[in-house]
Each structure stands twice: as structure tokens, then as C-alpha cells.
Length: 78
Image (cartoon, rainbow, N blue to C red; front, side, top):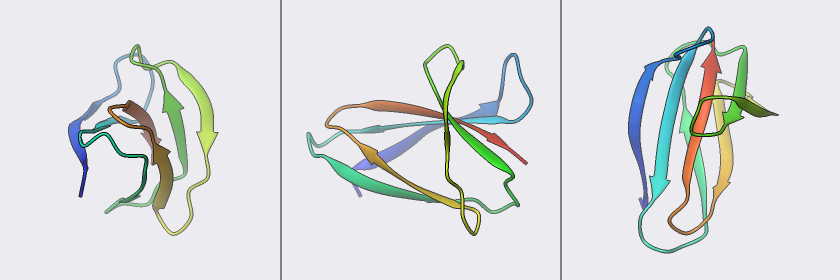
């Protein structure tokens, strides 16, 4: 409830889609994202959309820790 998905768009320089979200209530949070389509890989990215690490995706969903006021970006590959 304290994490907002701010952007969903096509990736600029790679295949897939970018999902960007942020925490807005100054709370450490576990956030789960459910994808409506089959996902083969998910990468945590920096704001320039460069892959930093692969995130485990099971049953087309991911669960991530979001720090207070943190902006997080993911690249989703179908």
C-alpha cells in the first residue's frame, strides 16, 4: 500500500519492458508484483535502465525489498 508503480514502458536500449516504482511513506517494505503475462526473466536496473542483477521470478511474480523513499526499476523480459 505504500509503494506506487510510477512507470510501465518499453525498454529504451534492450528488449522487454521497464517497471519503475517508489516507496512514499518512509517505511522499509516487501513489495510483490504480479505480472499478467508470462515472464522469462526480471532484472533490477539503475535509472539509466542498465541491468544490475537478475531477480528470481516464480509464477509470474517477484517479491522485493524497497527501502524508505527508494526508487526501484526492473526490466521485464517475456
